[in-house]
Image (cartoon, rainbow, N blue to C red):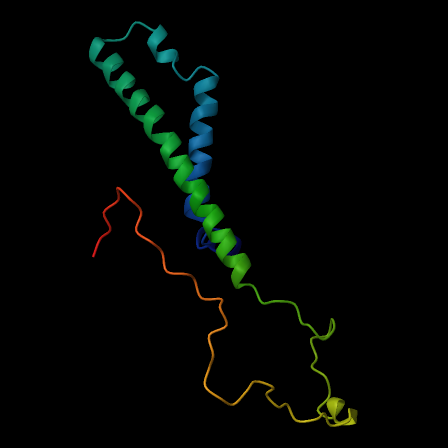
Amino acid sequence: METLKKVVTNQYFPAGAVLTAVLLFWIVGLFGGLSLLNNNQPPLTTLTWMLFVYASAVLTPLAGLLAAADLIRRWRRNRAAAPAPAAFGSAGTEPAAGHFDDAPPSAPVTSSAPSGPAQPNGSAPAPTKPRPGRKEAA
């Protein structure tokens, strides 16, 4: 009972059930699902059956595409939300606190840019000239 509860409450269950029903409908249809039309039935029964089959033939591919898209969307979202593997080994441990203490101190970082006002370096785009025959919006 617990397994059934896990399956039914799974986020993939609704879309998976719809996709399964659509596939089952088309498989049954391929193996003689329209056999009712071969029997001598009253016209209203035949018309009702034909309308049901027509509606199903139109709507089941749409439902199948939506269910498949939902399954793919959920799978990608869950895959992206999964925690990334640890970068410091398989145990997931971080380096010891004193690991970087052995390295010699580096020189302070200084800027080599001039301290004066900024000079244009010529990389700005050139002003564009209006093209003949085109009206530009103001």
